[in-house]
Length: 116
Image (tube, rainbow, N blue to C red; front, side, top):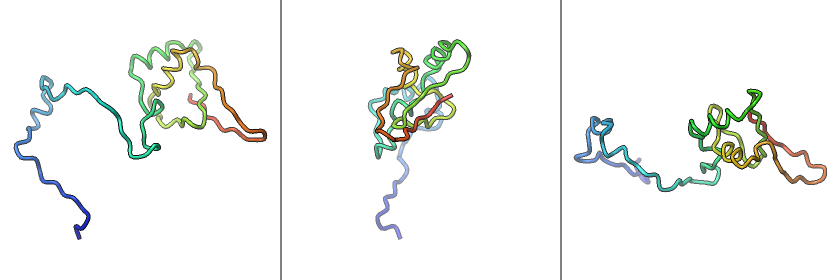
């Protein structure tokens, strides 16, 4: 049955594939407005946004011994496996990349993560 389902028909007079892939087309000039997510868990915060190539190179150039290890508290899960989060480059710019300040209750086993 199709009850509760919405079906859309194809757009009439939509642009062709050639227009979409034309590098000189005005269609490629887009300015992002805002990011929205269905839930807080699905939101793209600074830990889910990849740093630009320039930001990542700048962060990696600041490492003297060739190994970058970043402590991240449990409220900011490390989800990306192949990119550097923009949050790390922003913290490095504020010279707080080596420090992590957390509050734990007496007797609590506090979990944190290490990004290598």
